[in-house]
Length: 308
Picture 1 (cartoon, rainbow, N blue to C red):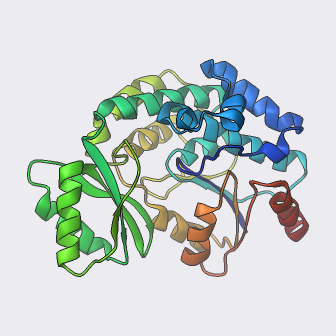
Picture 2: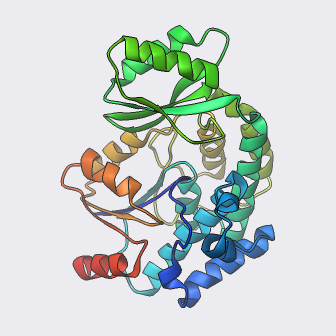
């Protein structure tokens, strides 16, 4: 049983997919996404400037285009078909495009708006995120509740048994770091982000996203997609809209998604996007999960040879 997973923000890199520059299907995906938002995403991803690529409003559609391009190239090459899809945060939109729920153009517009709304929801410097290593979820939740006071701090990404990201007001995140340190958790490291994703501070952004999603037509998934908020699949348009809106201010339950993939019998995982962050999490978090990244031509060829 094969699963395809699609990465979220942070997996972008200058020159991503450069080896695929001559692949018509790859350039077509970038061209379609670019036309939808009036930004040359291919030039941005290849030539930069890097600061512009890393701006949230550009990163999200660029990474979407890259992930969908790799998916469509895999289809064109006759690659093995997955039984389930999942995406981490932004990657959920890539998974929904792959499943036929959203058109690439509609998704590009949505994630562009999503990035803008997220950036505008919290002024620069007000929010923060930090990764907590080797601490139990219950302890992290207890500490966050203890130190929040009248601010927001909570678990945002439940990435693996030993890696949980917290998010909220910068001052509250710092208080949580200090308290976790005092309780024996030594590795709490700030992340270089400007937006505290997947916490209550994102509710204004979620409201804007809900308005946009209400105007977008959604189809029934051709392949099941596990959603971040509940690690479940949904078929109705209303349920999918709800899951996407709630994803902005509720935690990414990636551990639960991996557990659900394992429960469905998944023993092979392909990361469909630049990098291999999710592949590392899946190899550690899923029993007997063989995996390949698809971000380079050599990686894609190796996956095809192994799984054909």
